[in-house]
Amino acid sequence: MAKEVENTSSRLNKVKILSSFLSKLTPEDAKIAVLLLTGRIFPEGDERELGIGFSTISSVVKQLETTRITHLIQASPTLKDVYSTLDKISRVTGEGARNRKMNLLRGLFSQLSREELEYLLRIIFGEVRIGANVGVVLESLARIRDYSPEEIRRAYMLVGDISELAQMVVEGVNVREVSLKLFRPVKPMLADMAYSALEILKEHSGYTSAEYKYDGMRVQVHVKNGKVEVYSRRMNRITDYLPEVVDTVKGYFKADSAVLDGEAVGIVNGRPLPFQDIARRFRRKSELRSFLKTIPLHVYFFDLLYIDGRVLIDEPYTNRRRILEEKLEGELLARQTYARTPEELEKLFKEALNEGHEGVICKHPQSAYEPGNRGRKWLKLKKTDTIDCVIVAAEWGHGRRSGWLSDYYLAVRDERTGGFAIVGKTFKGLTDAEFEEITKKLLAIKVREEGWVVHVRPEIVVEVDYAEIQRSPRYASGLALRFARIKRLRPDKSPDDVTTLQELWRRYEEQQRVKGIDNLGL
Image (cartoon, rainbow, N blue to C red; front, side, top):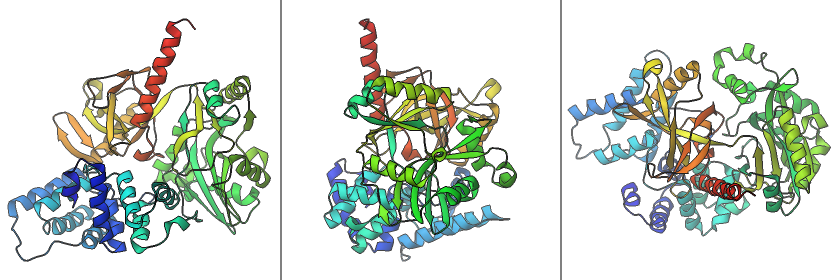
């Protein structure tokens, strides 16, 4: 089936093939299949990892190539067999773990045909490349039960896990009835970029809600009868890392059950710390208890998705904000005001910058909360223009950077194909310690090496600033970042969260428009 999907260029035909295939599976097999088809082994929010690198897998494959015997009778393993083995590999720890993982891999690989092994290796390395991206799979699931594209996308937003959604669809569960559920995190709503107060007011019909844009860790907090859980924007449970957030909600939030959206910000001497200082908490598990005391956090809440049995995501932002203000004390709320003129909006923007924050987020007063969606209903205005990229390859450094992977290929997400498109390279912006750290991480996710270039799974997200966006015949994306520089690592973000190629083209066009105005002396 995977080969059939790969060999057709028609999106409609891919959808037909996938929907026919998935509809014939059991719900449990459908759950596994969509994960593998979209290049995942474990769902988002699941912290399991295979813990096996390129060299280990290559070693097993080479061993099999020298001893391979064609099995004429033995049937190929089922989807459940394959997934069960991958799960076992992820759970192997302790002394001799590498050898035990290799034995499990060897046993699995030896049961597969060459073609089956090729596709499994693509999945493991995150390079499936058959055109079955999340959008195509969602269309396929919709076709199975005759759901509209809007209905299936909404269900996906609320479930947050495409594998669970596939299981529900194949089981015959009516996904139109899916709703927000406590302790099942949803993807956060995201903001698009704006370049002026005037642009924002025009987009929001002359009236917008503006609030501080904090440079912290996005948190989604679920509360029920005294139980509090905190989730990251990647839907990982991070409760144990943020005790201040738990204590704040328990002490000051006035409701029995709720889902809140907010930002945890490091504050020292009344000033916010850079995001990188907060992110260090999540890279120092062995020193967690002592490290938690070194950077005090303050949480600012700016949205409310659920309250005491009432789902709020379809209600206007003004309603959600009003209820949030009723349930929380002022110092725990994101600084916010309503603006009708550029002067009012620019005043708050300058205040945010003066207090050390990134800028402002502007929300259409009548906007619903759309989990996982990035659009014009929320717009961000920042002092510096940055984008989020994922590293897809790196080159070995020379001179002082010898021994490090230090020239990084930066890519954005192409919504049309579901893949990633390179838009530049850079070695600028990182410290020596960060070069060393990122080299270890990249080598752990290596998929192949060509000369001095190491290709990796698209996992590591970085925030990048640049001087300009240029047209480029060098990259298939058609665009290149001029003077790109890594501003910081973003371990809180998923590759799915990075800037899209479509957004980058929009920024390029806006940049050209502004240049044209400047050249006219206006």
